Amino acid sequence: MVELTLTLSKFTYLLSATLTIGFLLAIIFFAKNLHGHIRENHKTLRSKAGIAAWIWAAATVIYIVATLASVLDVSLLEALDFTTLRSFITQISLGKFLAIQLLGAVIVAIWVKRCQRITQATLVLLLALVALSAPIFQSHSASGGSHLMAIGTLLVHVVAITMWVGGLIVILISTEFDKKIALERFSRLAFWAAISVVVSGVINAWIRMNFVGSWQGNYAVLLSMKIILTLLLLAFAAKARKLLAGKINKLIALESVVMLMTLFIGTLLSQSNPPTRPGAVDPLESQVGLSFPGSPDLKTWVFEYQPDALTLALLIISLLLYLKGVRILHSRGDRWPLGRTISFVIGILIVNYAVNGAIGVYSHFGFSYHMIEHMILGMIAPIALVLGAPITLALRTLPAGRDSEEEGPRNILIRFLHSRYAKFMTNPVVALLIFDGSLFALYFTGLFGTLMGSHLGHLFMNLHFLLAGALFFHVIVGVDPNPNRPPNVVRMVILFAAMSIHAFFSIALMSATTLMDGGYYTSIGNPLNLDLLENQYAGGAIGWAMGEIPILIALTAAFIQWMREDKKETERIDRKAARASAMGESDDLAKYNQFLAELARKENNKN
Image 1 (cartoon, rainbow, N blue to C red):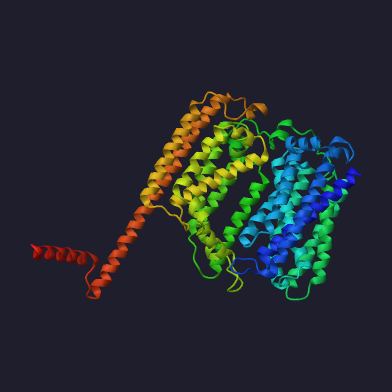
Image 2 (tube, rainbow, N blue to C red; image 1 turned 180 degrees about the vertical axis):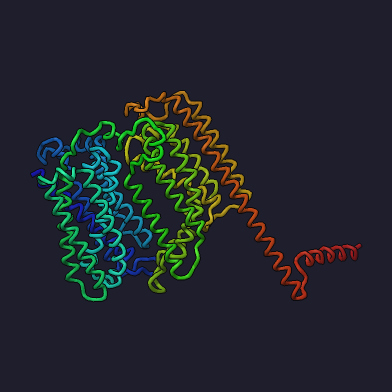
């Protein structure tokens, strides 16, 4: 009974979460909005999303109880003990992540019914995806070796298939919007989702199984069925893309049935333990999430590569979207500076090496290597990324609304850039506080050790470094539109302040007599045999050295931009004076001299 309840409740919450996400996609992308607001005749989609989210929350509650019963090997009624349940969701990792999903589903159910604008619905969609993804960090993929790769691929797989399945089923069952227009947009989403599902599924299966010797047993049978159904879905999708102009409701219905079968098989797979790969899993690899490459040498610095799949997927998507934008500009005859493209590509490659290359690998085993990764993500890569002008590219290539009443992605981005939130975040003082203030919050409060101890924490930390650096350098040297662009003098002052604060932080770190890692490097056995306090001192010195150089580069860039602006202003004044002279008019300097002469004449007349 417990196992049956586990399977059915998980399938129910996956299906209801998928429908919630599908209805949100319909609100945001498929249905036409009215100047950014949800139309009255589309608000039934909002109600349906709320109902699906409440079912999701209820099914999650049942799943939590069934999971606890399975763990304790007791009946469902015995698992309903309040004290035991409270301990499960507050002290056990799996229970905590399931509780996060439950809380997320409840917030989605309440929030979605209050959404009036599609931007609000977009935030609800992001929350729903985060909530659905939370338990993955305690799935079977997180229990073995290489879980940095396994968890990332599973996250990509779940998010992609949820949007693919949810979008198609909602198009099939909804009558609130034009299906032909919705399918045109959905086909683009489905194309990328299908690629993500296939690639992530293959990689995850390879990690969790021995492809040569494990194709037997129930898990292999279920996996084979899922592969066949996925291939069938791809065939249906290819056929549907060719029939967009015709009636394809029957094909969509058939595809939806196959999708539901695929979702159910996926549920059974998630409830089954995959066959173990030959050889015992290295305890260090199981704890850290990647294999220890040994002491660093020239070979490992160049060739060592153990990717975090989620980070790698985000980098690939970002790069592909940027290159697609460049291709759109070129296809319509517009030019895009090659230097910007090169700068952005270099920035992506730098982030990839810092997270997935030797630096990222060794950052898990030594503080000094972590500090190198931090400086690259927070101070070097952001400069290259912001000089690639991704916001400007998006403004020039994102589509507008499908008619004069609809607010398209480009309009939404423009409105965001002029919002109070954007103006607040791009205030140079706020950007400086986030950029440098977070250093003290991370390393001098014990937060660093906590974040290093989990995949999610490490991912959050890297993302924060990159975004905080991107925000700061966007304000200081960015070429993208800035709703709160500071004067050149202020930018110089902020850069000098950042340099001083960073130096103070590095000195404080080098002067520390206690470890800042909260015992993390000791807990993994200190495989590099480092003197941890001395290595922490080295990390502070590295942070000081690597932190000052990018700021000096930014200072030079800001000064060059200042000189160019002055040059452009001088040229503008000269052109204006030349036009005035050609028309027989006095230039600004002559007018000013005449004004002074007139004042002197009036003063003489008074005397």
